[in-house]
Length: 101
Length: 463
Image (cartoon, rainbow over all chains, first blue to last red; front, side):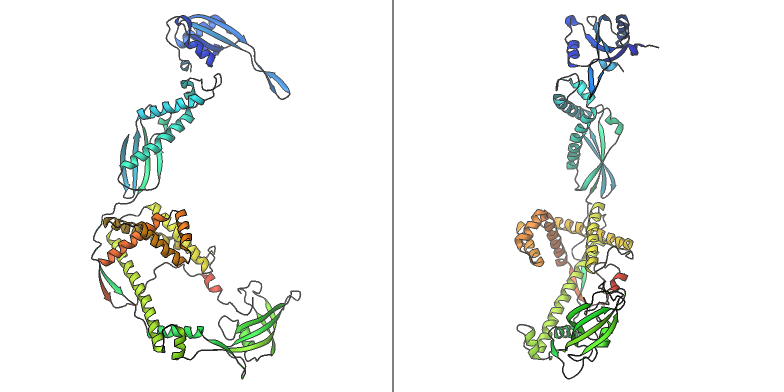
């Protein structure tokens, strides 16, 4: 069975994502996740709302192609993944990714 | 920080040191921010990762750093507050190892097992009643010394009117051939001195060289014992041809005033020589009596002052005694690997000895402290000179060696103990009593073993 945990895989914790989260416009937090490639925006919205207990304003997604890697002669590709930018409603409490356990 | 002392024994204590959560958190913050400045975390430029993430990622490292900083500091503070002097390194353990997981959430308790110098309650150490027994010098002992002096100043005189007798020294050129090994190279040794009839000479040599005169030649066989000193010859049979070069006898000087004069500056008669020897023996006996007196005083004090010797020190002392014993065995020609040596017994004796030594040292130090005995730099200097003289080395060399090994404190403590001992003797009531023949050995000798007796069939004729 597919659960919300299968949809949201992990938060994206990078300098860029954290800056975006802190400096959200209009008091809205912008969360960033790696999500299942087949997940839809409504599914992601539902999952984030359930996990963190917050209201989601909107979800934007992007398909990231896996990077090409090389082991000597052999060329390969890391798996492709989907990234989701989740904008929370204004005035929601700050989310701590640590709650995702 | 809170510290509790748990007494285990007079020389063992356990400190329970509690480090406040507050202090841990402060240290945690300090270390984390330190880490955050340099940490490399994927997704972040170096040093840009938020502290929260750094803390999570480098949990173990940060914890190690915090503890490594806090524990020694807390321990140092705790020990400083305590009155006792600590020996060796404290043994540490955490009261609750799981609490390390949430470092900073609650106070951290550590237990430090330490060993301390025992407190010594001084009893009576002045006015001891002691007996000094000086061994009287016996006339026979003087005779013995004179006999060996005569022996030492004897000269060798060629014998012409008779053949060699027991006690004579025969000088021989030997040619030897191994009886059972015709291939072996022949033995060829020239001008060997053989002492006829001596215990150290193999009986074959004595028998076959008896009655020889110079320029004579004799041929005889010698069977060497299995345990002969020179292993190349042990157990072999050799046929020797001996070319006699000289026969000489020992001539003892006449026991007269003239000989006595040659034995020492300012000695004019035999009687004076005897007197001088008597004097010397008496002074040895006095020194010996003094040593015994001190030993007895110490034993007495140790019996009246009951306190425990710290294990670490006893072990340290024991190691030294052990090394000394092994050195002595090697000097005596004993192989410490000999399986017949009863190490268990030796160890037990040494352990007792070590404990006694440590107790003696501590007690004397305590008395020195009570009496305010202090050692000045000049006294240390003096002692270094004395040691140099005893070792026959230049003062500078000894001083350099001692400074290098930082032995200054130990010299000082040795001096302090000696002074304390002197003080005890000065304040004791010493009666001179008659000598009693019950001399007990001062130091434990290694028990005799087979190896010690094996080498006594050495021989001066061959090499």
